[in-house]
Length: 161
Image 1: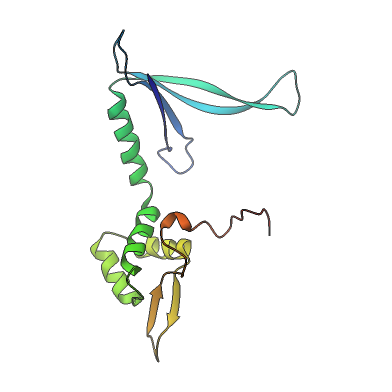
Image 2: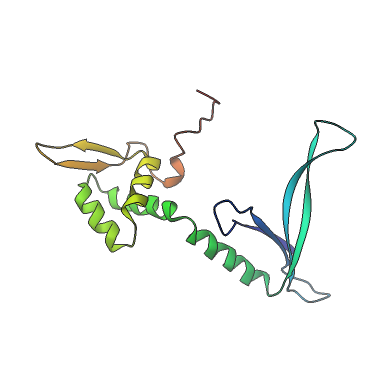
């Protein structure tokens, strides 16, 4: 049995690295595999027609389980906004909270304020003035129950606006 997984590039601009590993074999070793990437090419005989092709890379040692764990760990390390969105969902689940409390809780959980603001925007968290002076409260939009319910405001499922 073979497994395939994607690993995001080490830098923001790096292409995704994919791996193909042996996960199980009853006639040979059940470890090692190869890295590869997919690229789009235009077919020589058919102008304007594109296809995907695999470009094989270096051999990979180890087990499929280890490779998948590494891919998951790297993905978690690269998604601080996703973690911050989950943090905000949990924090605001019981009702509105003031931004000073959000900042204090975020600092205590290792989230930067800039990342929290990006997560706030991605989740469309509402900031409303609750009194005179500097009294504000953050709250979740009515229908939002998970970070997957929020999508990038610049993307529309109906095309360009």
